[in-house]
Image 1: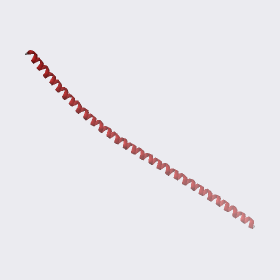
Image 2 (image 1 turned 60 degrees about the vertical axis):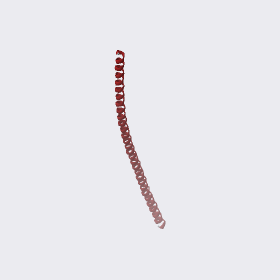
Image 3 (image 1 turned 180 degrees about the vertical axis):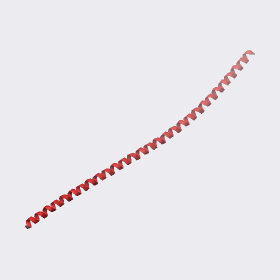
Image 4 (image 1 turned 90 degrees about the vertical axis):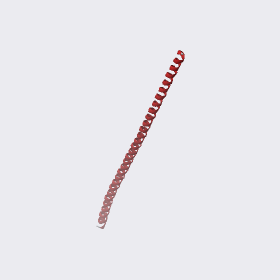
Amino acid sequence: MEVSSTKDELEAAVSAAALERERLEKLRNEEIAAAGERHRAEVEATKEEAQRQHEAEMEALKGQMQHRIEQNQKQLALMSEEHAVKTSKLEDESADAKTQHESEMTK
């Protein structure tokens, strides 16, 4: 009877150990899944932050380019105005020279 009792105790201990092993394995798998989910969330957050940073940099560059375009347009307008003034002055000088030449030719 003692052998039977020891055998029953041993079987109960083996069964309890198997149940504990299953419980620990399940817990380990849950921890692995949670760690994987945390990692995925961190990766996603990092990607989102990188995207926001990229968009901010692109907006800054866009602003710089717009500012340069405006500066170039102003400079072009000034150069165009200077050219118009010089052209007008040359036309006036040419007309004066023509008038003077005609005046000299009629003398």
